[in-house]
Length: 143
Image (cartoon, rainbow, N blue to C red):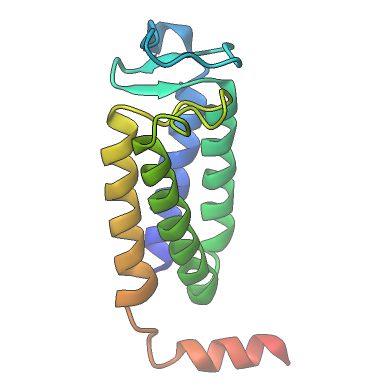
């Protein structure tokens, strides 16, 4: 579980940072206009991003790194990522919401990627049971 949060944290952090390299961005999809155009483009030619989107990825990355410090923190992170990313995937399918009111592009390949991220996070958030000693460590930490 902690490894899940650590890996998601690292990947989100890296993706967020990569979005600030203009050489990794191809022109944005003209069919989806956003009002926040800084660093707006297709990351690696596949995923729509802008500077706000990049910052959100960095924040999810930092959150994942922090959550990876405990089993229960990692589970909470996994559950939150699952819920948030399925909501983002649904928003990406709705034309009026697929740019988050012009602020963050959520369309195209982002939709299936968000579904995949949510599915993996849901597995870890609800499908993995805590190890036998996790409750003991949690109780000891409170004392």
